[in-house]
Length: 121
Image (cartoon, rainbow, N blue to C red; front, side):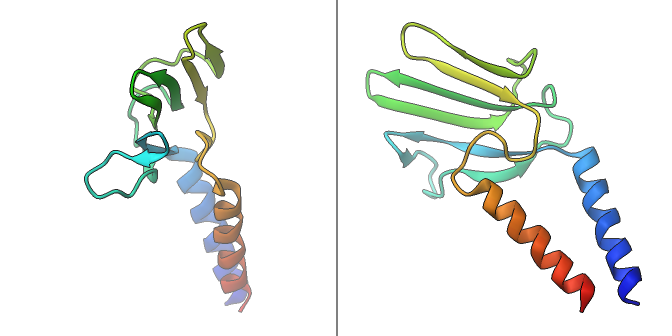
């Protein structure tokens, strides 16, 4: 039974990562969330939206530093980052939760470790 659980866990991880990109989604101004709930950046599943990239735009506005993260709305044509002389910085990446929230790697590591521990017990 333990081996069956492990196989199921590995299969589900592979299927979920193969078919749907996860990106951080949200907007901040001067580090403060701008959404009504005040939650800031939250993980979201793109499910075929955009081009298959996570998008992050950072720019200095007249009101301060604006940071936007989301599933690519169609601005990305390739992986990488660009910047402009006026302080705008855009990045397009194609890995889960790669558009930069602190602790993203730790979160994914924790989820996989918890799943592995469950599968072996």
